[in-house]
Length: 168
Image (tube, rainbow, N blue to C red):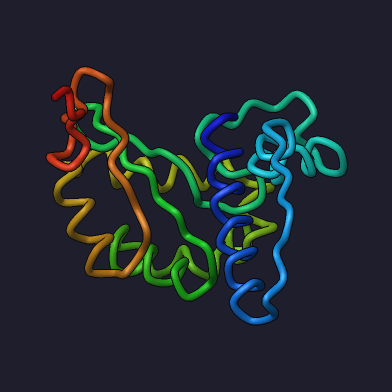
């Protein structure tokens, strides 16, 4: 929560500086840790309040977009795929999964259908990715211009060179 409040504080300070540069007037800012947390949780909170997620656990999947979540590759490695529109859906099916007919399957033809049939969708994706190394999946997703990220176990995460702490 503190990092979110810091992020929104930084944005507010920048907005205040821009306003001062344009108008010559100063501004006050307020930050709420709770407000920052609620803002970042808004997709899940809204679906809980108005959707069908009251008791449904979806892990790393997005409550309103599918496919958008972690999928298992060969050797149990996970990759997070974020398909956010129909163009990306077509490319995922044809270029990554090698299943161009899946694009028009009524069970997964559009986002509402994919959400309603998430079990079928996940099984179709996993049936392909589970036979593919994460590096191969990464290469196909990159070529298809689909957002993704590797999900690493804590013991496999290596700090980036720029993330080293200055202890001196």
